[in-house]
Length: 446
Image (tube, rainbow, N blue to C red; front, side, top):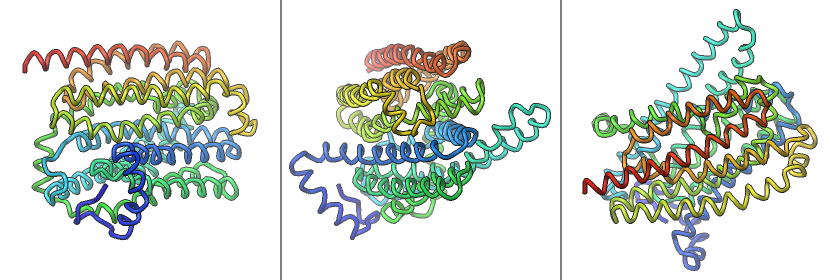
């Protein structure tokens, strides 16, 4: 694990090399990279658990529901940013990844993604203003104004950190990602504790996430050293990838309807802020599984692109199979334990503030497990640039999701959790079918 000269912070790089060399000798570079990725997402996941648990004990249910809705809305926005920038950036393989040309291209991606993050934040603030005006005629939507404004506040910082971490993964610096995530962990935990002690309300709580993301991004940027943006490179990147970006961005709209992050938005819309607070509490216990999946996915997306470029379809299949098996084992073990000990865990984490969540936690654990199994197939379709196939699959799944959640809302949070799990089963079947169809078609054209 070493940065090219133009992207190196010497002291930090040498320190991390000294720490990791014994692990690389004994475990191998690939295994060490995965462990660093797990440390990264583990730090983020645990920090979020600590923050939500701390805030869930002290915030009013309305404020806690607003924070939960903020996170759901943020991840809705993340989907568009990820589709148009992060996914293409992560899965584009450069013939000489350590060259100055590759670094300048990565830097241009960074500035384009940052500009898009600011634009998405401004659009979210605009939506908040519109909802605030509509609330005069429909007071029931008034509570959505605060989560929308909070989302606009935290989005630029959180998207900047997310792109920086993906850049580090792309240049095989999972060790630096883990280091930056440690900064995120410390900042978020301290921030949530300070909010709970001094300012127990929604706005300071949201600022804790923004501060943690800023700290992590600032730790990463001296190592990455983004060069000034190049208009020529940006024009070429847009020309080359706008078709794929368009398809991926289009597929995100239906995906946002049934993703693990967006279900909280549906609960808020169907059932209001108090149900949102209850769901946020239940999701806090199962959400680390998504962090584990993201850790595996962050490493395997760039590896899938490299495997296809260097080994062809056999290499891509190998990475996808290994990724799905690893996700099944790791998330299955964690979610199984959460399901077994759902009652005691809820009492321990929230100190009795949200009792009786055992069934919701177990149902969400089932849905999250199935969601994790779906990601390797999506990786394959993205790497093969099968955007149209993904769009069809996601539209079918989204239509089913709306119906399932609408029906489930009559039975409370439990019913919506069942609808979410059923959606993931259907999505898994559709993705595996679509993956086989794309592979057979590609091999038939070869």
